[in-house]
Image (cartoon, rainbow, N blue to C red; front, side, top):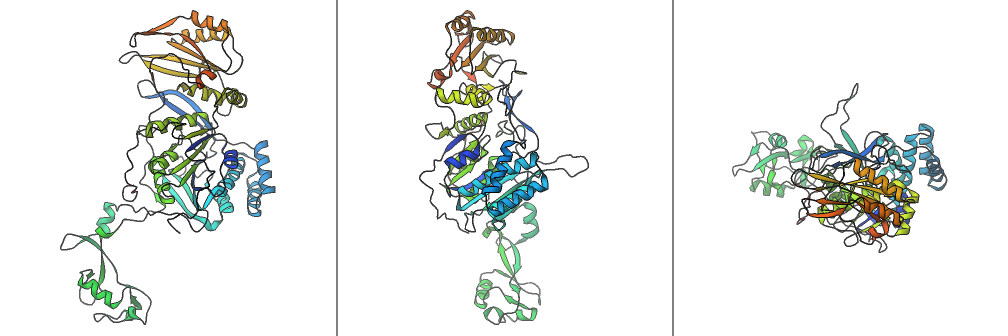
Length: 558
């Protein structure tokens, strides 16, 4: 075990980068072998839940508006079966035997699909870890027992270091069983030589009262420990000292006789009543603290009103990730999160002066990550870090629409900073149901406690004047101030005429007029041409600005 990393990072590895896309091909195509120092992943748990992102309303409170970010249910379909076949035929004997045994045990169901897809990704994560690297897999008891079998097969059971228990909630009522209040974090390493930084924890008042109850003449608190250890010795440590023969008690001294004299002269030995064995004084002010244990109850979950909470499902506290990153990496090391979500891992990595790589399969998550980096660190894409996988031109935007209209809708609304509405996770068509034909929403102030709405509609296919007339009807029905139509195709003359006939909206607060219906193409948005709007209110919850990281001390502070 070491605190240094003998393996250099390959020059071909691009860091401080966000990838939009499926993490499996991203790992296969973009991340070289033995290039990453630390991996943290918090994958969906296969609990058959939909995870909804909540947004704040214009007054800062949590809004009813929400959107499904992802479904965590995996299905045994052609993709899962093909991946299973690849693992059986193209993996090591250990991995193929493991996954085949699980299949015979579990059968072709959702859990098996989840384990197959996770196995394929964990194989890649093992490949990209440096010899000194570590992996932390965060999960809940739904699948943790299966995932440990998978991890043992891929990393080797000898590389299992800990099963960390994190108390994620204070109480949970469950009928006819114990309340589930914890998550599991598996800690594996690539080899026996891995990066490790101690993080001593402060003693509790109860611990101090119990063990450091003695106070010296000078006011120093201390506890007593043995001067002897079990087993007879014939050498220096077995000699008689001050009339006490340790061998009579089948023991030996922990120190040499000369050192015992020195300790006594320093007042470090406690002499009890006559006949009792002297003991060694351990002073509280010389102790670093308690070694961090595998049950973590000191990092509370994010409450509903926590300043750190952004409304993203499964969001974890930054302090939890800081503890992991500090323990298993050093400044300048590379931290990777293949299920990046709202970006807590990369925020913690940035705060601790690590390089980072984040991957997520939804544009909504990438949009949240970009906003969080701006809010917390004032970091901007292209200037301070790179985003790969998002459309950069009209051709790639059209490709995204063809591949996944729902993610295209997310991405297009994010170009305006609008709150996305509608759609269903994984849907190739999106939806126009409860959203009533509205794909995005913006708000702006019209004075104290007065707000006006801007509705956004996205069209990736053919468009015509009827679409503008329909949007005008939605504008009137919703009593919105302005409507924006985002299109892939250029607007026709008839569409522009229809938009002009909708008239102007005059803002009393901002004392100017804006077209009530505005049409803007993806190409125009990508080239920096926006729309005419009053300053809008950010619909995403704002992350707290990071405090200057003047010293990296994560022992007693955590």
